[in-house]
Image 1 (spheres, chains in turn red, blue):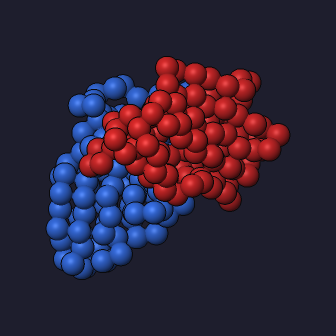
Image 2 (tube, helix red, strand yellow):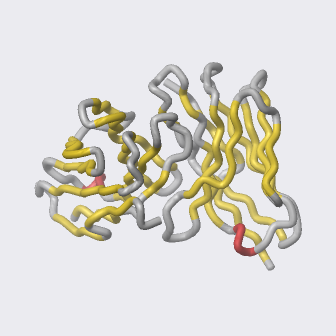
Length: 113
Length: 112
């Protein structure tokens, strides 16, 4: 089956620093690459996504980059703020399995003021 | 996001009991999903339904069953609950393009 791995599992940064989380996947037919944010005690919510025909997408302080050849995509957060503290999940879509999302194990980001 | 609701929000039950978790949505989406979340394991798919007549097993369906009563309702049942089914359960929906998924608030289930 599809293998999805996220690194690192935990990440601690100082407020104002940048944070990068990487997600690798095994299905070369994957065509949609989202990132979800889950704050403590809350539901996961989509924060940014990218389709397979695009290499990078930005939305204010967050960006996602995709390397289809190497089968990985990354979440970049610049100028981190305490409210960025949360668990982040990648969830590549598996094209040949009815379009299901397969979630990574999550990365717990802590932003220290 | 009040568009996807789950009941109950918290439940404590005993080993061997049958329990049903319910999910309702007002987003008009055809696709609905049930996930289980355990610490360090992310979200794992239990069952998913692309319309009322199309129900599929996910990666961890053993010990669970589902019912899609209508486009807006998707229920998850544990026929005989066991302690390792203690977890946080999320329902989610998406439109037919299958991109963004919208999650309910979750149900925290404890099996003693």
